[in-house]
Picture 1 (tube, rainbow, N blue to C red):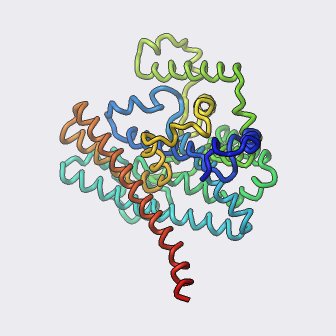
Picture 2: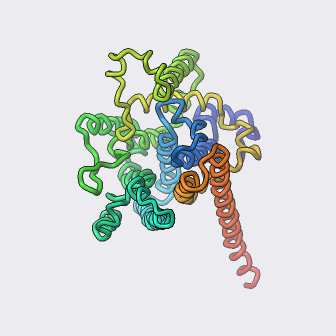
Picture 3: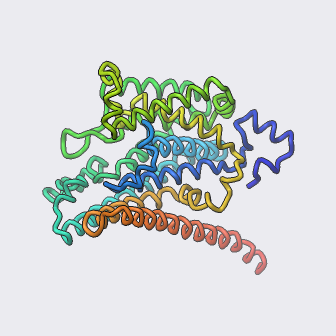
Length: 400
């Protein structure tokens, strides 16, 4: 991989016109912020963990989920868009569906592992409330029905909602890619219309037990996924949106400051009393399920400020301190799964062993360290496997 600073001057100028980097360069920001989102998700899944005060959800209207979904759409368009150009639609669709099958099998394995972990913990500590809190009580009341619904992605414990959303969004990708290639702005317009219609018509997918709906409404969250995909396909638009403009930066910072005040008002009553009733009537509820426009606007403002402050070739992205986050971002599926299991283990420790602030710090550090270790082991294995495959043809040729 070639970093932007090492390119000739004319190439750097061309990169600036097409979004900041050459087509062959890997944008480390994608891996870094996806890895950071996975760390935030792990920390936020530990109830009563004061360390979660360091995560974005306490300082604004959006959180790590928006980061993860947007980057997922961006990277999906990048990876499978290249396949579409090289191998055509049938192969691209086959690869996307294979990826969806991998995600689905991973989800089912995680479902069984997480359910077993909750059941074992509830039995050992004689705490049946765990099954209620984690949303699996109906599994033990009617296992056959619950398992069938789980296979249909309609029944799931708490903290597993992101993966089914990702599966559904990826299933739609083969239909989107040809249109993204030819008419990306029309795809974005159609996605925006579906987003507005879903919010107006309260469209969502049902869950089990009956009466529930998906925590992340795929009809709404697809808009953020598609937005990421469209921006990947349109480097000119991406560069135009990120062009330095003082009024835009001031507006973004002002909106982030107002969002910070609003988020803090949920925690501190004296701040909430400063808000007039007519304003709260307009603002609330700020639905995460349906991706409220205020959450979407907050994410856009945050993304603009962060990307203006973090150029593609920022040296610190390749510094040793950033490496653990980047590695987690590159192994996102495995890291997410182990993070789900570790977050419940951390919750168990805090509830039944020691709930002190030092214990909260230790379980958080231990969990993130385990995620980093897993990502490094996977990276090492994949590198060794690639080297082995590259050496095999050379060895056969030498024997011939």
